[in-house]
Length: 337
Image (cartoon, rainbow, N blue to C red):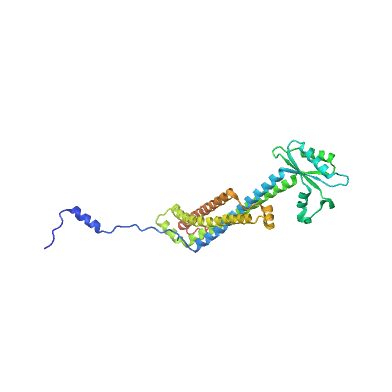
């Protein structure tokens, strides 16, 4: 005997819905594969470009700070040099020159460089144990001046020449001008290198984007055929290259920051050696400071954004070429293959 149908249709419908498997939407795959040989090579190139850009930025910042330190130290002091003479009492002349210089408005203090300090200054060239009495070595007086209100150097020079004919005043203007010129030249060279690095990176991204589009041209054409907008396709490529550029620029920037941190640590551990002293005198400390690391981080962001923007423009241009060829197959002028 057959079982009678259920008198409650709602319960029957509920049982049928419970037995029916739940429908799940299959996730869509990206237009471009998340990782391939082209993407890995582009990431390595961007890492190298980011490392060179950050290295150049840190080097320019380091040289500028060193030149500014030299300029500040030189502009705070002037030097009076007195040449020895048979009829000259050197100690008296040194004291007189210091007192004359301190009479001018804009001078703060004066220091006579004694014989021991003078011998230490000449020790790298003439060796230790130097006796200044055996050599006609000039003596120095260092005058500290007010940078915001410097004295009248011409009047001071004339007064010293009249009082002590063997005295000469050096206000270090030549050195200051050379340091400023060197700093400006270094900044210009560094800026030029940064522009070259960015230009090379943009061209690399353009070729990489066109290569990716050539390999997936059929996908782009199918998406266009089914009605996908150009902005959608460009956004997908933009996301792909944004991930690659962020990884590459982060790796290059991190390596540059690690280089400066390691160099600064090595310099701090070997301060007393001649090699470190010479490097410090020429380049200053290898620490770029907080602003330097902030500049490295900013460079990383700029490289990532520039790469993404370049990829988007290239994709839009290529899609325009596809549309133009599809609308007019006979037209090939000015359109890349």
